Image (cartoon, rainbow, N blue to C red; front, side):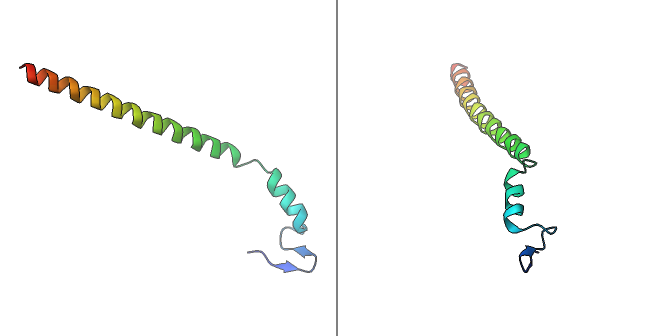
Length: 68
């Protein structure tokens, strides 16, 4: 919870501009977000590949069943 007390805030004694500058320069969570986006992209590609393979397998089995 943030409370303002005069010119200083409850942000470890930093002023709001100093806090905002440090907040925007902090890159701790950037790597986690990048990994999450990569994982999402891989998941979408895998779903598309499995769907394509599934359709091809269904067509193949239908053809074989028709020839039997």
